[in-house]
Length: 307
Image (cartoon, rainbow, N blue to C red):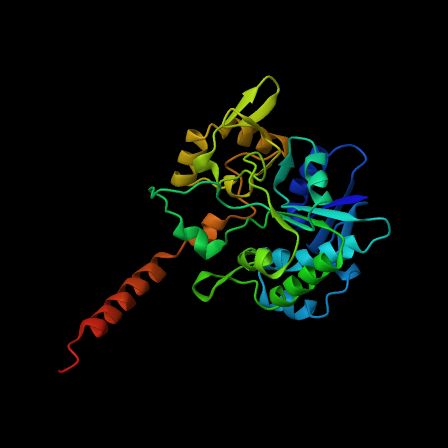
């Protein structure tokens, strides 16, 4: 049996509902809840699973980091349930558009399935180049599929150990939640499959190389590959670069349809956004102070050492 799951806070539950609605009827779907009180039939509160250092994790992490850090613990928990042989994790902001069996059949020859952030070499553009993905990871943690095996359990235990205290958003110290750690997985573990299908795990991170359109009632990628699942996470926040990418990739209609389906609109306050973390709103006095301190540092750096 296959268990599809996501991990979120109670505030993010409407997104989880939309993910569940996009799954085939009868599929076992579970929601790992790390924060907030919510009584729903398919939710599992973090208190119900064994995370030895959860109190410390809760104290050290913000909501985004805590959700990411708990992911391998929930994966292990669901994979340990009677009859479950496979688990598929989707980010809470994901929607399935195709046949889930396209994923489960891949697990017949793999223990761990990942998808890359990029499919093709990326030239330098206004919003960055390939090196930005060296900071955040080669594989996207918005999707992971696992087949039960000793190899998989070893992977989850390894991931758990690192995310217990190293799941911060801190690019300068080599940390980007749970995602950057995935760089090691194809090296450390066996039977790892990297699926490069352009219809898998589409999102803002790879829309620069993909164009979304329709054929009949179905969504297609680059007019040749059926869209299997799309992660709307970074499409929920309006920025100039993000808006440009959505427009050029033809994705606005898809995003607007998703927002409508969860009764949100683009003027709503975003629940989460990597763009906000990279470009936080800073008070004017803090910007002034930062400029002054940078000026002082610059003077120290360039002061002749022999004076």
